[in-house]
Image (cartoon, rainbow, N blue to C red; front, side, top):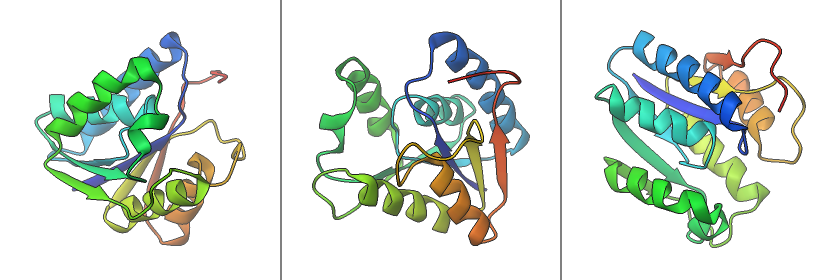
Length: 155
């Protein structure tokens, strides 16, 4: 099964730990998983590590060639490690990541997946191309969406 991830970035360490448990449970429930992720900090990275830990393989969808430069500096070693473990890398044709590139990456993930995990607080997006837009796209394509968000959590 190809399982994609979308989710919020910049989670607190407590919230990220709670989300980690939810993601690991979801990955385990899906059996042999090919995880499809943009490998951003936050939910994407937690998911990618959970897939690898469960013995699954990883497809990295990179929104732009300069994507790494826009990630938090302290996260880049984690990104590099996850990217090196990806069995397949899909590099989109954009140079600078912007809302359009992020949305195109989200669409590509959905189009290549059987299901979507969304670490989403259910709120409207803070900008185009974010989690809410990827969820809406998946639903418009008939791709099943499982929303993971800890009860009472605020981002």
